[in-house]
Structures are given as structure tokens and as C-alpha cells.
Length: 93
Image (cartoon, rainbow, N blue to C red):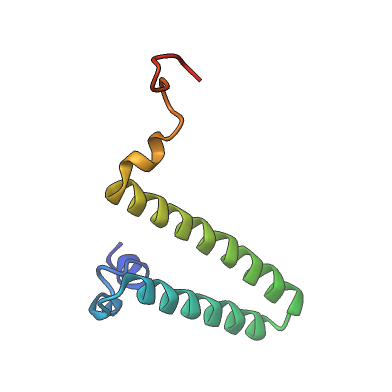
């Protein structure tokens, strides 16, 4: 488990020394793309390369949306309350 965290957890890996979290995320994306290309070239299938890049992009995008949602929820929780509950006159929408 430590090896997994060392590679994929930006708070444990050497990336933790980069002060800007968005730069850490970008560096991890570039490394992920590099490994996807490397494995595809090693296997010799360009079809696998396209599928691997697409798959990694979807996973990275999902992780980015999750991080963005958590960040907004921590800093501006009222943003999620727009349109929820009752109007100013006491009635439901």
C-alpha cells in the first residue's frame, strides 16, 4: 500500500514539495500520459495507445471534477444551496 501511495498520492510522493496543488495535478497527468504512451509503444499496438489515452483522460477528468467539487464544497458551501429549499416568500420552487 505504501508503494501505491508513494506514486499516486500527491501528499506522500515527492510531488508534495511542489506548493501549488494544480501544478502537482498537471505533473501527475503528464506522467500518466507518458506511461500510457510508453506501455503502448512497448506492446506495439497503436490501437491500445488511443484506448489507453482515452481511458486515462476519462479517469483524470473524473478525479479533477471530484477535487474541484470538494474544494468548492469546503470553501463555498452555500454555492450548492442555490435553488434548494424554500423561496424568500416561504414557498417551494
